[in-house]
Image 1 (cartoon, one colour):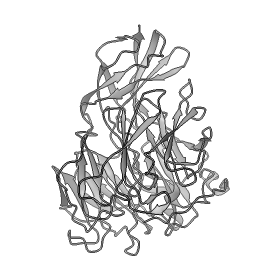
Image 2 (cartoon, one colour):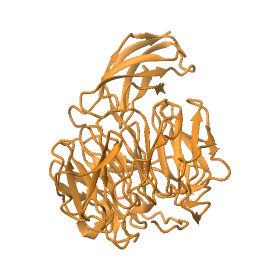
Image 3 (cartoon, rainbow, N blue to C red):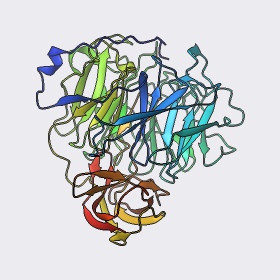
Image 4 (spheres, rainbow, N blue to C red):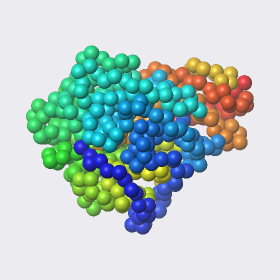
Length: 486
């Protein structure tokens, strides 16, 4: 469990980090109205950000890109408020496949008080201009807590929620299922969920006495049940028994490798979902670990992670895991490091391919990565037509890998910010950018080569004309198709 504190951030530029990798850089976004933390990408291209710890945790704000599609010069709107009794820190979040619903569940704190609450909320929104309308969502029957628990959206679009403090997990699909699926370790606290290409969900155990019979255990969810990993456990115990903290786990583009960062342990392990095996990964430099913290997959295939030494200590630095070279190297820091700890960070890839980072402050910094997009990971679109009626709804777009090949973003347990769903972007001849609203995808699978479709609505404010249409998933754009809006 993380130690709550109101953050006063000193904006210190790390000359040490800046000297390491001059090709990478950070760009500040126009300041938000209040200090923010977790971020989500709405399916109309806007960014939803929670006002967290340094602000009012009952509220959310929305960042809309500028007319040229850039977020650093975008505009903020809101606030959009949770139900009046719900003001959580460290909670579960997801954008659902219907395109207009956001779910939030639990929290380690409520109104700044340690709670492990079972409260939750569903948010719906009017695309492009509307705020989020939040209403209370009752917890699963029999659950007195949810707390700082992990969650995931499965390939069939259903939502899997863990209970932090028990072994329980439950499915939500417009309502909670009646049956719990229990993990084998004593409870879910400090573990995380990672969706795999084969449709299973990976969780690494953080208990020394789990019923999988090892302190190096992992589990896989499939077909409505959890099973202990069958073919060999993690080579390294990645959590410290005194705190059970664990770092982020990110599925990469390199042979489907998952990197699992250690918590209060200076180590990583790598998982191969195809072989169902683990190997020792590279050791982070300078004694850095990730006792809770964010990581995100760059379009170039590297994983950007915010690390810091020990348990909740300050001294953070940003590092990149290169799965091809099998190395972790420091990269340029943004102004939040080294003054913070890794757990204070929040990261998410933006539709531009930049990775947003914020540490309970009003300024998001966008990481500009170096290098080119990994071949073969971009979505491909196959439009049914090249002409659309302005403001039309429920248009269908077919494609390959519309959900990308990874959830892309991760945290130690809570604060999920997955972006593995298609956005649709239109650019006119003058460089003006418009996003449609995608919804009701045929699948949420991230298996390579998946053929699927998404429905989309056009923004009625788009003027008639000729546009370049493109799907973007996990910050990576598809092939471009010329279309006309009548």
